[in-house]
Length: 195
Image 1 (cartoon, rainbow, N blue to C red):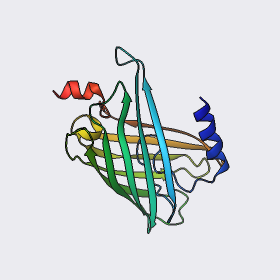
Image 2: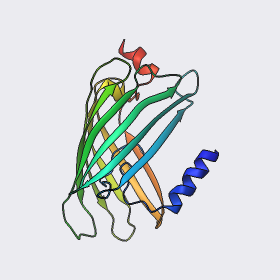
Image 3: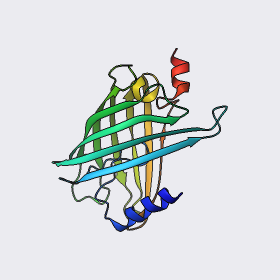
Image 4: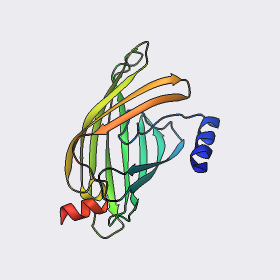
């Protein structure tokens, strides 16, 4: 809990220049040129498995400019332990569709190459998202397709991604996202289902 409050305090004390993901899906933002963004996400699932399950991923992005960022992500750190920890490297590119529009229509696409640190080889993750922001309310809706391999998702999975972001203040927003289907994020359950 102390770590959560410490992270929140550091986050509020420093300006955020972009948000590379909403929660788990890619946003249409990219990291500002020559800036490094570090983030960590943990997920706790107590309702699907016989025992509580914790999973996490940590990632870094670096803004190159021209609406392009490089990314590195560590997937599969979990309890119980994952049989497939993977380090992914890749990029995301943002394309504003109508500069200056109140609706901020934007698309983004990216590619990650997960390298298994557990001996299951190279994988892939390709995605694309589109977003619009409602004028006045500033609510942003994001949606798009995702296709990735077992090194991240527990199998070759084609799915939809949907996200919503609602700014409350200049530095606080309510955010939510969703992947369709059954994504297992390199858990033991994924290893058992694929064998």
